[in-house]
Length: 299
Image (cartoon, rainbow, N blue to C red; front, side):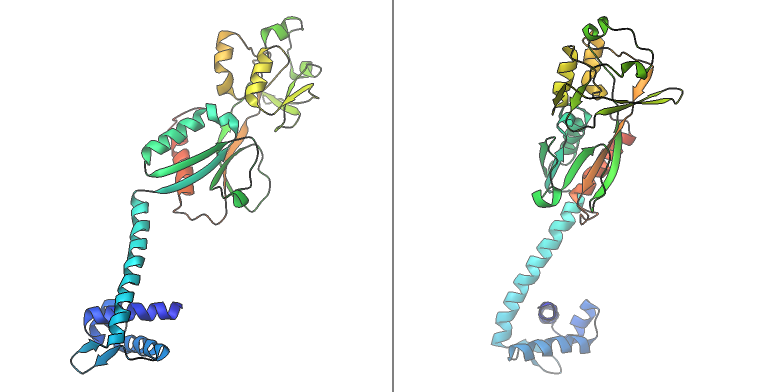
């Protein structure tokens, strides 16, 4: 089929150019190659397509019918190529993204809004969910994932670090000794998050590190629920900083060890390995990176 399509393109250009030599020049081929393609096409079809003389070419009736189809084929091919070229200049199409639910309230959604404003011809479908989806099976272009990346055939790129805070309600701290070190928290209650392991890593400005393992009495599958339960006085939690800024400001939550920080979590873009460099997936990733480099938000 490929040989026939190539021969059809040569045939159409020859008819338009009016001679083998002119067609050869337009196609950067030799006249003998042009003649070979057309002769081969005639042999495969079992008909004459062109009447040839030393001065001119003319179409047979079969040649006229085939030329009409060849022009339609080339016009469709040209329209397809032009559509891709136009997309490169002004991107169009649909981009399907899945992201953890926690990012719906954070700066990531501001990034999405900025992308949508910058590229109005791109349709976005975003699934905010803590259920990890299969990109290949579910036809997803891009996933945003938090935490360590498992080995897989998917491509990934770190976008930024998610800052967390160690928090608890003032009422929870009121009847407990003031902690001075993470080791003092070993027997305290923690609120578990289903998607995260039951341990915390804390570090000090001097570089000291402490791991705290715990068995939660309450485990939930929503970071928003973790924040609300912590504010209700049910234990310690380490939510993303942007989720608890207001609660820390108004006193609903406080930091029991302000000199210690929770380890950040990496936020990654993950996508299928066959995504083209010119795809909307790469364009979105580059957009996110440029926003971070310009300091458009702080996590």
